[in-house]
Image 1 (cartoon, rainbow, N blue to C red):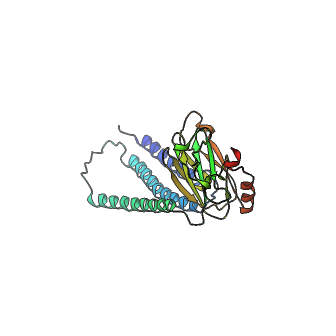
Image 2 (image 1 turned 90 degrees about the vertical axis):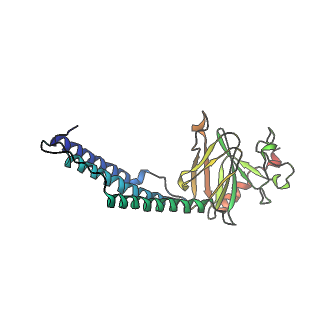
Image 3 (image 1 turned 180 degrees about the vertical axis):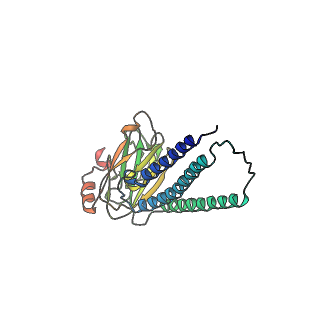
Length: 270
């Protein structure tokens, strides 16, 4: 279809205006993320911004070139069709640029993922999270400081999370409906599912991990802000998915110790 000069002008103008609005909307990113609350989240945000800048430059450049082509090659009475087979220097430089960008993005992502999935520091506080339709349950060690073993073979009405009845460390374990962690130290999270696939999501901490039936998944993070944060399930897990929300409270060690002392150990609740 041939475009008149007026049509070409308006098409090109639309592309440029659309590109400017899109770029401004993305650059004004105050509405994107909730306030950052973890050390690892800062690194994730940095990698996200690098990805956004690289892809944003490509997006803007492509639309500017497209607008130019719409105007430059608009229909004219004396214009003849041109046929170009290839442009070797351009193709090599374009392929090299894309390769370098992908190496940066993939290398940065792999490095960060490996860091997050590495063993947590020795002084990390460990919480085991159980997911089930449609709630989160949080497993803490008791006064002995050691979490009892769990196994799906032991799950029953009287033992809903499969604590090993022969494990002496399990007698004082604590299960809670809210997640509390002490501020100022790394937090290691062990994730288990009782039924279907879930996803443990901490938006303020930029952390998310699938919770897979039949296996344990792990992650760890270091909080930088005290407060109360939402824990949504980020994987469609059934008709009640929308109500599967938990609460994470990051508080001082003294406040955490007071809270944990008020919880009832498993052995005393039976």
